[in-house]
Length: 405
Ligand SMILES: *Cc1c(COP(=O)(O)O)cnc(C)c1O
Image 1 (cartoon, rainbow, N blue to C red):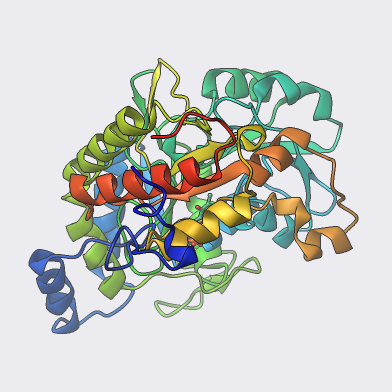
Image 2: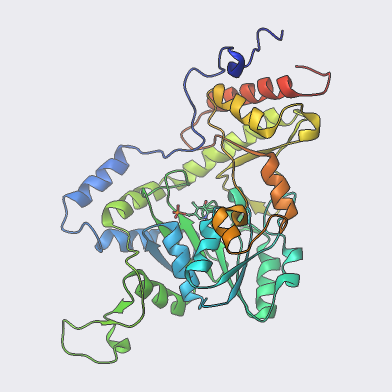
């Protein structure tokens, strides 16, 4: 390819795609729309049967005994931290390579997030570094199944068992993933899923905690609705059939029937959604494999990722451009690249709490090198090939090797 023919769009060349391809997006069909319409015409817009249906469906899908739906994944994480008993000064070990909500939920409860560095191959919480961060105040571990690839749960659960800690999995990326043949959602003490539109299935906003523990289940239900219970066995008093008690400071974290009817309809398609993501990821791996300037996502043998994100890592020593230049050039080719994530503790709010650069050097250097490529079930292989063409075009422009495609 001559240099003039592959002139970057950012330099005035023709973009690889005529229309912008987002990095993630929901897939909604007629069945989803009908499912929501039915609720709009029914007696219950919220706190009705569609919520319990969605909870039962998600419990069945993950193999968990209980599921409690929340207004968002973040609210669900807050509920899990409450149920785990996190309170003032309690320490919770987590990864910095995540959306801020994973650590914020600890702060909501007055706890202290303790950031432990990631494994440079999987980008998941490195279990080999957890024990050295455990103190008398440590109460829980929150691993994130980053990009959809399950974290090393056997090691994490063993550490938790040895130190009497609770494991709350942030599985916002990992609905439908499996760890050594077991479904994510049925393994740790509690597992959070998110139904934001870029995730595997959507309810608009929404989240869920799955658990096998009846005590956590009861606490989650009560926390979700103002700390109120009507359960006769648990009331202190009883003034009559109208009576309920607010026994703890809960929140209004309820999801609606409108949203969960969409969730149930979406969940029916989860198999094909994940299959599609896996196929597209496989095509990325195959087509980008020869590009020397990139490190592709490493997959462990005993896990099945559900492929929420496809992240490439730039080998900056092989490039003349920066990550920012590559990122901007790809955007101009109409490829909706993104970056996941700014390490949580680098945000100004965390800095104001005393967290400083340097806590997790591996996460920080990965952050400098990551670019997320588009991946969602509504894409097809032509879309992937457009992304591949744009990546090759941009990388070959910025490559410092003499070899050009
Ligand atoms: C999306 C996400 C959340 C938060 O979920 P919301 O439903 O948006 O509140 C938490 N953690 C991770 C890793 C996420 O990707």
